[in-house]
Amino acid sequence: SYELTQPPAVSVSPGQTASITCSGDKLGDKFTSWYQQRTGQAPVLVMYEDKKRPSGIPERFSASTSGNTATLTISGTQAVDEADYYCQVWDSSNLYVFGTGTRVTVL
Amino acid sequence: QVHLVQSGAEVRKPGASVKLSCRASGFSFSVYAIHWVRQAPGQSLEWMGWISGDNGNTHYSQKFQDRVTISSDTSATMAYMEVTSLTPEDTAVYFCARDLRVASIWSNFDSWGQGSLVTVSS
Image (tube, rainbow over all chains, first blue to last red; front, side, top):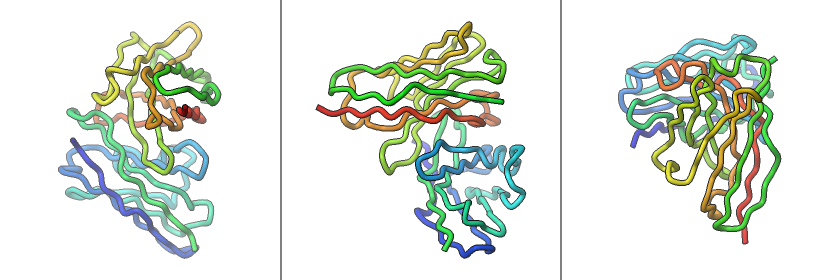
């Protein structure tokens, strides 16, 4: 079955840049979406189709994909960005797959 | 304004069934698909299945296809998911989410319900 692997945790200081990776076989052949989930809340779509940002999502969020790795970048990280982040793809064999998740802590 | 409002928390005994609901408003129900995704305590998100708001077609994760039935009432803009033969491992928060381009590389979950906690315990 298809798997997406993320680092369990990323720590960042306020105002600095946080980078979250998502690795999967031939990930570059798919479109990756990213979701933010604050504690006790529902997920929120923050990036889609690799690098598009939904309306209402701050410009400090960006994303890219190269080869087998997708990366979500938060520039000028703020305390409100502290959350779990999940990558997700649609795979024609395994349908919808989510990554293992990354906890971003703003120290 | 887009809203997906889910039914409340449920407690069931092992072997029982549960039916959850998701009421959609603020958008054209027939244009979207509705997915169900669950999250066990401390775990990642797990996709379960979807239903087309247009024609009621469904598609399930192989893991759940024997125990899950997703249905809808387009006149009421409601989606439902029934899970049977519950075990303690089904204890999770269950989310509904909408998708404009279901079953395609452009597919994503652009709006989510608040979640429904299902607790399975004897």
